Length: 117
Image (cartoon, rainbow, N blue to C red):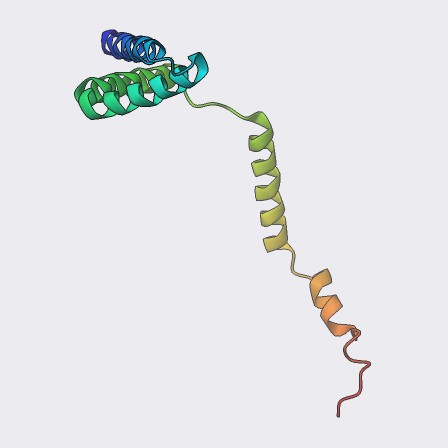
């Protein structure tokens, strides 16, 4: 948590400092804000890599601990659908008679009425 807070504070201070410098040069408030955000992001990517990586690893570890503590999410609808599909598959395997699909194949289709030349 300390790394994430430190990284955020440093980025915010970078943004404020760059924004202040740009407003001194009469760049305009909105343009200065956008440019400060872009420049602060680039500086943090170039020079704060170690701190950013440490913060990201801590964030990932905390997320994994939260997921482990919370357990596997249970979706009752999906479980019911899976059970119905499994039951349907076992019913189809036991069924020995001709399927409707087989009966459809015996019927002449629209292509059989055409003449062949």
